[in-house]
Length: 243
Image (tube, rainbow, N blue to C red; front, side, top):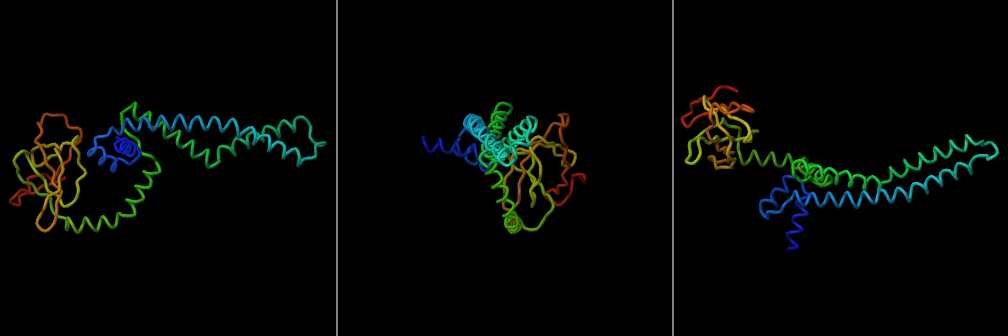
């Protein structure tokens, strides 16, 4: 039970790519946990900001005003000068409080909590913790050359798109490089139209290939986005139009 709670909390904080693995394997509700984390961030950090503001800012204003009056010749100050000194001391006190690292940190947590709650209410999706998201993006960027070399080793040189027929699907397209397609798009191969069912990885001679399993689409269906694929058939012919 505790392990499942910990996994749910972890899924709410991680970037989407890492979160999906936990959700698929353990079936945790990442959106609900993101909502709970957002509530905790908003309440705890928001209340901390209010309390800290009411405690620290008056002290800073008093200290700044006292320092100004001590440094100036009191005989040269009239009522207007004293009022102006108090005004600027208040502004500087507020700015000094707002720019403190603790204030910025708590304000960031409060803002993220609000974003989590809005995301849950609008589309019921989890929002990753920004620090973890940035760390994940930096890690991917640092490992990009290594992954690119590994991809070239596994998938080999770039090759033309090829198609084959398999039982259970209308068409399978093999590619040595990943295609930027999704299930919402209509794919045109020759004079026929298809939709993506799922994507797999297959052996392809000495290398690997990305396999896109397609189902044939009704030509009269609404087309939201059309992508033409130049695909070679089993015997080397190219039935599709040039993109």
